[in-house]
Length: 256
Image (cartoon, rainbow, N blue to C red; front, side, top):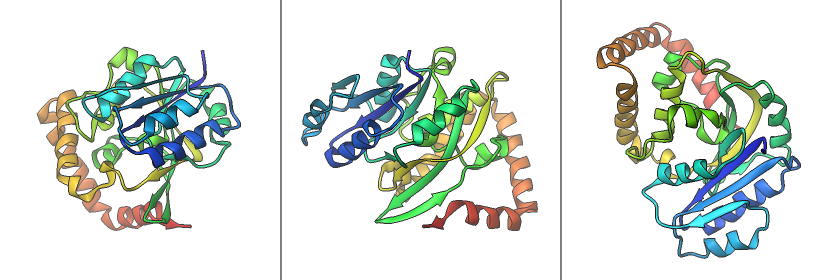
């Protein structure tokens, strides 16, 4: 059984897919499995997939969105930990999986690291928090392409909910983090250079994202508990607003 499975989903993004495949197969660490799920692209993506002999499993067929495609990859994965690296995203350097592998020996549920956002040629460093708690999750989330997820979580708590368009990973994280046995650890590593031109970083989707995040909480806890948490969180953030905003600016946008 490989230590890591990298799952890449793609739809009509041949150039981005080539970048992602190159970054994965160039890793100096070799104890990983590579799965590519394509949504029946018509732009030459399948030809790119066929050229690589480092992909352990791939398919090209219609799906019902991001989380349906990712769930297909989960069902084929055999690794202890799964990393979702969508087409266009790349690992930050060729030693990422070597560095991460030493952390994974600890057996935590989630190992998460830092992210580099690339948008219109500008790179920004984003530092993940040392501790994931309720206040953080009410206002933010793990960066999906920087999280190594223990595969048993999907067996124990289910796959991504395909009724979500852009926040299915957020709902899965909430679902798991509310369980007492689930653990997290921050890795002091930059994991992924994230393509900032995708749907999850589109400001026009902010309303949908907020709606789906509220839906995620309400699926997993009662509405009265959720509303209580929101009130407590709002008070906490207003009380420390200046400090929080200053820290977020430092954490969120450090240009190279």
